Amino acid sequence: MSQSPPPADGFRACEVTGEVLHADSLVLFQGQWVGPRGKQILLERLQSGEPPIAKTTVRPSFWRRWGCIIVDGLILLVPSVIIELIFGTPSWGGYANSHAKSLFIFTHGMLFAGIGELFLFIISTAYFGLLQGSSGQTVGKRIGREKVVRLDGSLVDMRTGLLRGAYYSMPALILAVGLFTMAMPLFVLFYWMSILWSLVEIILLLSDSRMQRALHDRLAGTRVILLPPGSSSKECPGRP
Image 1 (cartoon, rainbow, N blue to C red):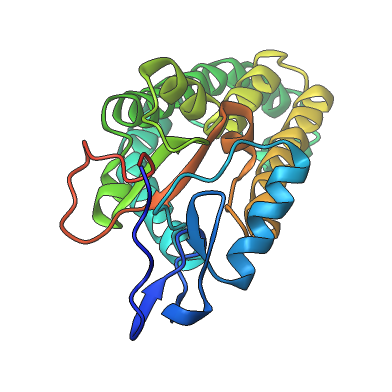
Image 2: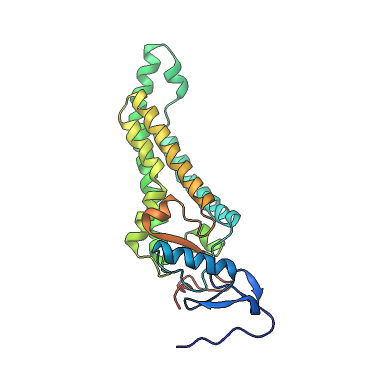
């Protein structure tokens, strides 16, 4: 089906970057009306063998993305506090204390704290996974009009949603494994592994100006798009 050309006058959004440009500056490339930057992005993706960017998908801004993450984090703060009250957390001061009794209490407290971190991983995975797998949106993403889709713009299924949720919650699982060792040197190693995972997430999110795919997006094969105002969560604007 042939596409109608852009209007001779006025402005139109690039179907790749979302930039609003004068209609005369857009060209039809790979079935999409794009500006110079959008055309360059499509060329790079074509050369790298990545799937073509779905039509009419616009990535959310960095601050919108983080705003949605903060909202979801505040929601998960409630079970986190409850879990900490029930299972407790080991005190670094307990390890630094030279008294054998304090160290004994600390190491055995690691087991209970590990169970708590494992529960937190399960709750976080279920929260992100079930909501993303059913509608592509958590509470935070619904407020920010964001949606999780596959690279080709299609809806994610439950398996993909749960995988994405598990990868996102991985630092909690890494901490749980470290605590289950009940050995402070090993716990320190796993602790820094969880920090490293989180840093890689942030670095990839900041460095990927084209699609803002963090580590959990790359592992799950997903991306986050911005929905137009008034759109339904069941709609998938990434599909033509």
